Image (cartoon, rainbow, N blue to C red; front, side):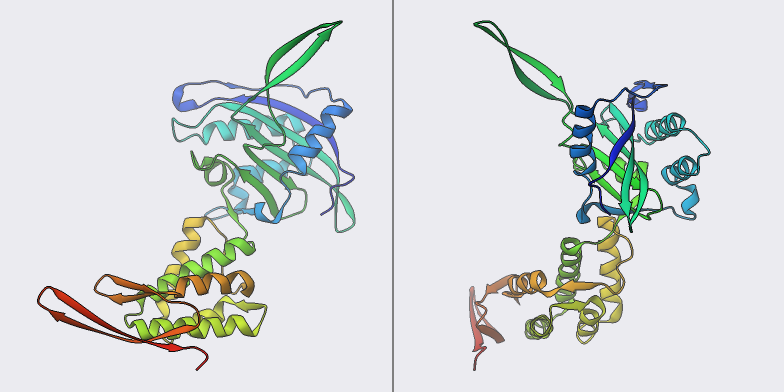
Length: 335
């Protein structure tokens, strides 16, 4: 997708309170007049600031995507069944109804219509939906002859998106941001009902998370080290490996359901789409594996961190009264 020729066609603002605190929903009935300077600020912040691989999601629904409110309203607008103003009011009403916690902050909801985004060589339209929950203070200087005066004003910074989503006509992938998700998660989970597409960072994080859970399920510390060595060998052979290849290695040490159970649990917790058969970069994965497998759990709540040039071979515990003697055997990886 190319956004270099994009233009802002329409902007409307609604005020969305928290219904649980009996705050109002104030709906506008007309769009703003736009100047070139305002359009350039919107393009630079609200458009360029949201398009990126780490922000890729897809809208979902438990039974039928047509029942997803955002997808339904957007489809009706792009098919010209409703006007832009009516579309934006429907989104604001849906967002107002999506407040299921009293801590959700009130804010301004901008709905923006972009044109001339180029997708596969063709121009497309897109709608951007942005909720601003925080305003910033700015200092401006005004001079009158030799007299100067500083003034404080409050406003919205389009370069710092609180919550936003960009939906491009004809594309399944959307771009979403929730900068304040640590407070409440309703924007992605309740309003959009979206799941994230795994990027390189999330794929690596999920994979190493499942690997660590598999390692914890291996009883023998020697077997744990062997498991790590097999995975490290895979990473050294290629630039990318498939998740199912790692799963095959894990099944030599634990039952097949361990990998699937832990994968489903982590994917659900992170709100990701299906993680079946994905390729993972060995560059980031290999470094994380070395760190993870450098720590060896010996048993009896005792762990050992060993350098990468040594391999763990065995350990013996001798309990004599209140003393514990530990004999550890290491082997130089280079022979």
